[in-house]
Length: 158
Length: 100
Image (cartoon, rainbow over all chains, first blue to last red):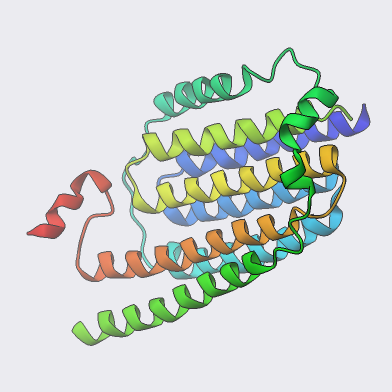
């Protein structure tokens, strides 16, 4: 019961932070709101019982991605135009949420459904399949190298 | 705890992110919305694995999701710097001006 209440509080704070991304006009404040959304999402990881993943996500998303976005994008220049249709955002998000959660409501997530989501292929072991580690590392590495080359070309054109 | 609440929470975050992509005109805000969607996917995958599988085999998927998010942030900075230098509007409805 306590965990459910904690999750509700974290969810409300996370929703406020996420909606703030679309409410703020300048992207600097939107970037800060995104960092707070990452923070509350990491707290949600703690609430569902995964503190280690929460710490890892906190380090990667806030320590890495948010800092990079705020320094690289948000502080570089400000743009002040109304970028989001807030009413349409609210309506569309509710519609998508209902469409996604409708098949879930009414079920009890018992073992029958457990088999549906955790077939033998999944529980058989993804950890031995280490290629995904290499794929993730290779993607970040190549993107970083490619970004350096692109930045160099952009700088040379000026 | 009943696991349906975290699942619905992840669904809600995903919905807001997907709706944000559809309703925003700002390129950077759209990428921020994609980041929100990726975070929701990480939370949903974690809840499914630890409640229904009970193992830590979700870690490769989480690393993949975080790697995609990091790559997207890097590419966003590149596109942003290019658009600012080329004096292109960040309004995606006006991006056809790039061809001119």
